[in-house]
Image (cartoon, rainbow, N blue to C red; front, side):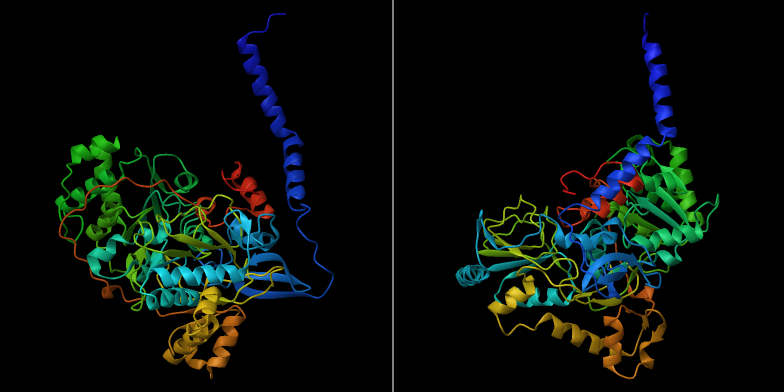
Amino acid sequence: MKVTRRDLLVWSAGAAAGLLVTPVPWKLLDDTSIWSQNWPWIPQPARGPVDVKMSACTLCPNGCGMKVKMAAGWPVSVAGVSSHPISRGALCPLGFGAHQLNWHPQRLRVVRHGANPSTWNEARIAFAKACSEGPVVVIDGYPGRAASSVLQSFAKKRDGGYRVVLGSEPRALTPYEAWSGVSASALGYDLENAKTIVSFGAPLLDGWGPPGRFTRLWAERAAGNADPQLRLIQVEPSLSRTAGRAWRWVQVPAGAESALAGGLARVLLEEHMVSARGPMPPITLGDAAAQTRLSVDAILDLARTIATRTPTVVIGNDDNPAIAALNFVLGATGSRGGIVRRSKRAEPYVSADAAIPRARVVLVDASVPWNFSPQTDAEVFRFAAWDGRSSRADWLLPAPGFLEDLTDVPTAPTSARETYAVAPSLGKAQHEVQSAAQFLGSIDSTLAASDKTIHSRCEDLFRGRAGTLRGQEEIPVAKLESVKKFEERLWNGAVWVGESPHPVTLRCELKEWPAAVPSAHPENWSTTWQAPVLPPLATKLYRESNLREAPEKRTA
């Protein structure tokens, strides 16, 4: 019998349809999920009393609230906290599976010098010798912590440098530093009061900021409504999950985002759709249409749409100044529902992306993403909880893993209000570990320990008598009788939330339209997390929720 190409296509389509309605693929997926949660390297907790501790996730700077179930003193499961003021009960897949990370086969258990095992004492001697021979540069991934102040103080005392690796979310706020003189670390997005959000590639519904912040807003004010209270316009080359769920998707070629921002600003200014004044973009409407492959009428319609329902705020996926300047034209800088100044205390940081000249030694904190490699010829001491097996560091030093070290959690990068939380140590490592702050404290005994700095910060917040503590109940700080009570509540999972910001405290001045720069590819939790490993539960959640393979260069 002759089999034609058409017969093969029909048979393939029928087989695929039949496979979908049978339980075979779903059973295989279920079996794989069960198997991946029972890998032999995951220990079985001893029988004993079960307790629940409240804490904050420290895998990234967002600091989501979490309930940690403890069995015989070991964390065995993690869940979100619905009363948390920022994450509101949500966690990313990594957070749900974080309790498995400390037992991963790639856990860094011994000090390594090159390819050889070494000791902490040898590492201290080598580091102290290097510091005596020349400048030291310290690189931090989560600035603002108590541990960060230790790193910063050590670098300052040695006439060295303190640099910071910023993620895409805080990096998108850096253009406003030059226009306002205010550090990007002191700025945030007032999403709760916005009515229209124009996102240039930022994955707002797929891992942007604290997982529960925007997704909860979207569920409450937009999801399922033809004309929602909160409009999300996603500008992106491909139909991402965020673009597919947004109120409107605007497809433009990769690299044309700056042209669209300039074209929109020109329309808004020429047709007097906005009250704010700003420099006229040099790009013409025709050129913007040609570069974005949108019609002139489509750009005009989009400009009218974003100016109709205000407040409107624009969010970029990187530090593209043309996208940031569109907020200036819309009057969204220093206004309700736009970009606000949440703190007066934050200071600007020096980026670690630039080359590091004339340094004798570079110390890299465990909070720095594993794929970051400092541009230096200096001797590199790198702290890490997991061994990524591809670092150019001369020394690899075992750092505390998930919830194995006391730390504080300052305000999340995108938040419009100041917050402060504490993540106590809930478990003990099975081998000798040290944080970078502890290591530097052993080199210089005059440095203030992190726990003392946390206590001092709690005292300052209590004496300020402002804000509220939010946990199982909400209590104004002014009603607490002592700093001891204040600290006890923080240690038990409460979060201090500051007062609402005053938008007028942020004033920007933009004299000329910034030059166009290419935009970065959208990022989410799977591409920005700092460790080269994934816990099995995160792998399961990632595959089942997205129906796609695990990220490349990750070991499940």
